[in-house]
Length: 395
Image 1 (cartoon, rainbow, N blue to C red):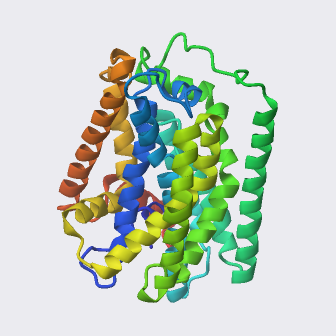
Image 2: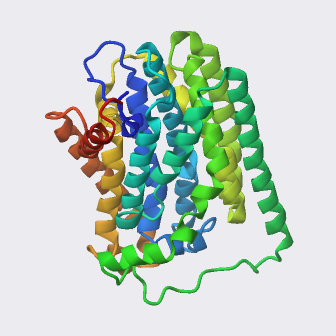
């Protein structure tokens, strides 16, 4: 693979033999799935601030249980899937470099740096919950870990996972020590840049609160390292090959047989602060089941079909679609655009959110389809590739 952005959408022509259909479809599922979580941020009148304050709960109206179920179905699963897929992308790049006789990680730091710059621009101009900056840093670290032996990689995977579990445990202890009802909530935004501000006002708001908005990326760093390494190991273990059938069955058993029911019971039945543990503790296991199920499906049925083709197109232009879906959602919901989020009543928020989600995924699917009829890469992927060739011409 020729660049870091293409970890989300490899620069391989769809008609070339040996292409793994499941990879593109999984990337498409991950991109549209992350929007399923983020769309609730856009449709909250107070944006990310309001969403975080209400995390783990739901409005007390006729849509309460619908909202809980819908949010829990997507909470953390597709973020975990996207993270694992990024690790798989690293493994593919490393294998490509080894086949070509190139040193690894070689010029990968240039790629990570450009991805970090992409994420910074996305964070400032589009979405304060950007994941690209965190992926750039994690990818840089894991790229060097992949240059070590399998035993060392396994050791680092265990260490990273243990650190993440320890952090979750400490949070659980801290939350248990706080009396019920004493949880801190953010003060109402006055003025509210999401509902009333201009595009530039929202940029300045992100700059003023950059530390708070980047805390999640710091918190999930150990988890991301573990999932990157796990994705690479699964790829080398043959999760996309016929001989990986036993591995896929195990992953589906863990993801769907154990993690998914537990996730729904805790998230929907209990909710509250426990959403942190389902999002960052249980949901990544569900994502492994999704990965295995899609891989198994396309090993048994190599043709994509209509839905698979559309998901694959989103996957091949994943970086462009990730940015575009956030831009479109912001245009519909924020004050610098149509400002619909602040105009919709609390009782109508759930159907409004569903409608916005369907409109956005339809729009980006059509855009991806039309674009790929004429071009091999998405527009952001093309710009990224050209920039990389300028700064690292021999990479």
